[in-house]
Image 1 (cartoon, rainbow, N blue to C red):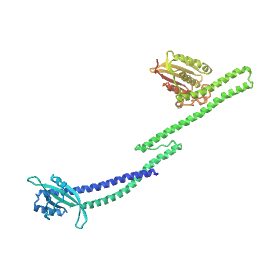
Image 2 (image 1 turned 45 degrees about the horizontal axis):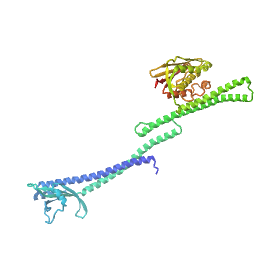
Image 3 (image 1 turned 180 degrees about the vertical axis):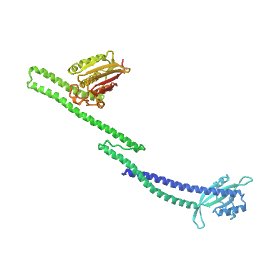
Length: 471
């Protein structure tokens, strides 16, 4: 059965209030009646004690009886055999007391019970009856007992009046409970509906919605968490949109980069097929096709390399590496690139510096950073230097290029990002993956990389490799 949340709250509040009032009324009636009966019993025991104090003298008992009759109380005095000694009635009149009660009376215990008797009109009425033993003053032995009785029908009448008053109070309270339950239920439902409405807006793409809350209860905590969730969703959506834009840009760039060499290769192959290229130009055409093919392979390899690193499919083979030898190899590898550029590459002395890293991946990191520096530097200088620190080796690559703003620095490690979109087709960087790959490889080495840059003044990348397991 489907039950709206409002009615769940309403019935819940109402049930608790009604149950509480019912238990309270029943408890009051029961406690009131029991208290009244105990009061009557205590009063009767006091009367029995007064009779005992008079030493069972006839004149005194007569006076006491006259006083008690005015209050509807009667008493009888019996000896140890259970024979009636006051008032004087038939000699055959005896107390009908169960043997176990007699044994208890002989021990000095007072007894009380509620009996049902008939009045002069034959109507049943409840009577409170008590038995109180008395003892011989000289010997201290059990001498008999006194019974004192009083009708308690008036207590039931009082209880009926109390029940009527409580029932009227119950009806009034029930009406107020219904009203208050409806108000509280509506208040809670409105708070939930506010969350529900906000959730619908978020589902429709509205991420600017925020809920006010005072952190008073779980719903306020839920509203706070909802705001955090919306903020996270907004950031995620912005990141997805940003990545999608970069993916589109990359696909366009990649398509352009692939189309150009493929068009060149296809044209040269057609020329060779139809023998329209002079014999002396054929070797040059082959060299050109190889160059364009390497360009395509490099583009594909960078993407595959990035995905392998992100998927943890790269296993580092760390070893102690003399940086001087590695830098000489990098310098030789980049000789042609430096010669074709307008920049100057300075690799400072790395003598006696030993680094613990994967040889090929370390070389890839440094080459990518140097290429990146050359890509964004014109008629400038790229300086590579290293030094020993307390915890490892620090290597920095500094250029005098175009630099970056703080906003650009925030995104340089992201895939497909290019700080200078006007230079996406240089021969040094086609994909926008170089720095993303660098960051992933640095993290795999458990190293750190920082960047400092100023627009039109240059950029400095600093990497710190730890001395872990360094021999």
